[in-house]
Length: 138
Image (cartoon, rainbow, N blue to C red; front, top):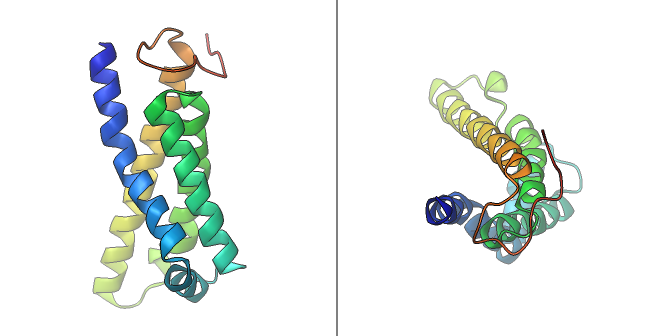
């Protein structure tokens, strides 16, 4: 089971680690997009979210308080869905559909991260991790 959990952790964090690299190396362009969505302090938000994704992704990947890493992703994903993909504001059908897909993707990933948080915080011995969980649930 430990190997399967490790493979799942690797697959799960690829998206967040690659996104973190993009946020940190293409901050100007991403800040312009974030600003067009009404995000305040857009460049700082892009850099901060890049660091958050990197820390959370590495936490889950390496198994260093992976429960905390998963919780950080929930904290990142829910506001991102709402701020960056407000499909309810779109009037163009194609743009509305695209934003709805991205909104739902972020919510689905937040749900998966929340389940990972519960899993990591509940199972004390995950194997193939550097630390155990920071939180302990039942």
